[in-house]
Image 1 (cartoon, rainbow over the protein chains, first blue to last red):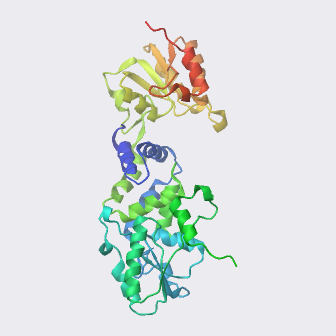
Image 2 (cartoon, helix red, strand yellow; image 1 turned 135 degrees about the vertical axis):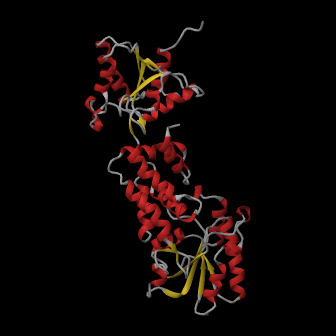
Image 3 (cartoon, rainbow over the protein chains, first blue to last red; image 1 turned 180 degrees about the horizontal axis):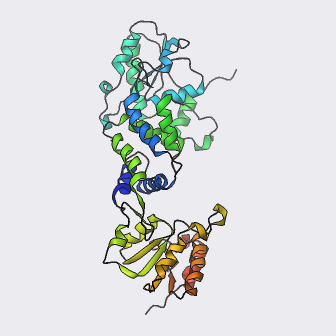
Length: 198
Length: 198
C-alpha cells in the first residue's frame, strides 16, 4: 500500500474493467513518471465523454449530436435495419463495409440471470421505426451466445407477427480458423447451414 | 473507429502500459455507460498525482511531503539502508514486515541497452548518505535479473572501497513453487546458497 493520492489513483484504475491491482499500479506509476504523458488531456476527455457523448435519438448508437453519423447519412439504405446489442457491434459491422442500411442498438440482450428482460432493451423504439412500413428487412445481429440467441428468438416472434421479413447472421466456422479447434456447436451449425457448391 | 471524443478517449487509454486497443475500447464504454463510475474523481486524481506527488529528498521514494513516511518515522533503524530500483520495490519489501531500516531508491538499474548508466541513478546521494559513517550495513535489493545484478555488482565495488559492509538478498527457489518448474539459473543458485540443516 502506498500513501495518499498515488494509492487513490491505483484504486480508481483498479475499478475499471480488465485492470487488476498489478496493472493499476503499473499504470499509476507510468502516469507519475512519464513526463510526456498528457494527464490534463486524459482528465479533460474523461469529463467531456460523459457530458458530450449521448445516444442517437433514432437508433441508440453513440453520437455527439442528436442523431448519429449513420442515421444522418442520406446515402444509407433506410429499408434495411440491422439490430445489434451494443454500439461497439455497429463499429465491428461498419468495418466489414458490407452493410449499407441503418442500425438499431438494443442496449444489451435478454439475460434473466442479470435481471435484463425485454423491457430493459430499446424494443418499443424499434417497433415504432417499423411502424411506417418502409422497412423491407430486419437483420438480427445479436451475439451468437445464449443471451443473444434468446434476444433474436424473442424479436423474430415479435417481427414475424407484424409481417416484417427477418433474417439472422449466419453461424459457422470462423474464416482463417482450424476446423479441428471449432467447438461442437459451431461445427454443428456449419453443417446445418452448409451451402451447395455451384 | 468511432467518432470524436469517444475515440480520443480510447486512443488515450491505449497509450497506457498493458492496455491494448480492445481493452481501451472496453474501458471507454464502461466509463461512458456506468453511471456510478466517478469520472470527476478520476480526472482530479490524474492532475493531482502529477502536481502533488514528488520524490523524498532523502531516499527518493514517492511522497506528498518533503520526506517520505519511512524517512520521517523515528522508529526506523537508521544504521541499515536497503537499496532498491523503484518505489514499488519499497512497497513489496514493506509488505514482508521483515525490514525496519531505511531505503534508498535508485530510480532504475544500469542498462547499457536502454542507455542507462550509473550517472542516471541516484548513486551520488547514496554515497552522501553513507558519508556520515553511521550506516552499519547496506543491503542491495535490486532485481535478480541482468540489469539488477550489474547494478548490485557496480555498487558493491563502490561500497567495499569505502569500507561499508554490503549484503545482497538471497537467490533461490521461490517458496510455494515446484522444484521441477524452476529455471536452471535459479536452481543453480539454490544449490550454491544451500544451508546446513541444524
